[in-house]
Length: 39
Image (spheres, rainbow, N blue to C red):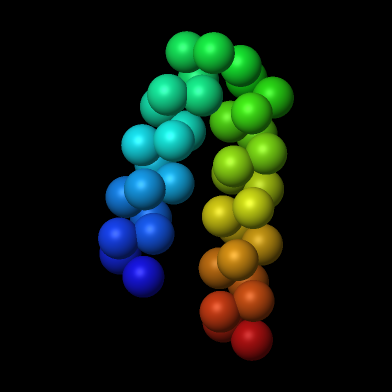
């Protein structure tokens, strides 16, 4: 699970330089996945 967080963070940094929308999408996906894992 930690590796997924690191990968998502790396993608977020890369996307941040390209698009803010892409970052928001990653944050949304990561948050939704965390909620699913908690369920």
